[in-house]
Length: 294
Image 1 (cartoon, rainbow, N blue to C red):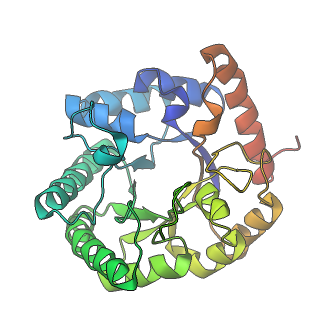
Image 2 (cartoon, rainbow, N blue to C red):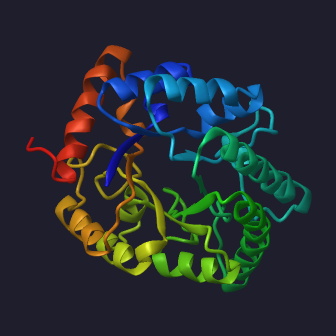
């Protein structure tokens, strides 16, 4: 396994400076966050990204697809700006699918191998019929995405999602079984899973069983911890996840991919503090994969 951290640990910095700091802290990999890659995409700075990566010798194996739509006004409520690939409005759904298809094309240019994508259904459902509609729309969207990903040989990792705090609605794709059923229907070897440990823990999923069920379909990871009630996204060992069991499960399935920290709960502090915390993050990661003792 290789260690990585998402670039939004330095969300207030230019992506080049963020990647430089990440590299200097010991990481050889970084997930380009949704906001950083959106900036690169909108500015068409792909050659500049390649130049920066080559200069500082860092690998961007994975990026995050847009969480907030690139096409909605910023003054709108966040819930109205969230990308939903199962949106009942066809024109909105197709707009966001086409955005991801464009991302795939440019990821090929920029040396990115995998895109993490949230499944549709962000507003939840109350009935089985509503779930089936969400499933059908996700299938429609991801089949179109899969056509492009197969052509460009770029992996798509669908992230396990969870309960939105403060609502009684059900939310799809909390389990490996649900995701695997969707992936089987899509029918492409380029579509897999992004394991988000914080999402799994907050919905009381058994992370170890999730890993053992998903197996080789885990194409990407979002590694973080929480206290079991909210999606805190903290460093490992800051919450209630049993990390020995998680690593043992990954070892059991012979996972040899990227262990990527996605920790928005850790970056709400001054830059000088983050410069200290990211070195600690690298030590935690090295401990997890057995390369050092804390």
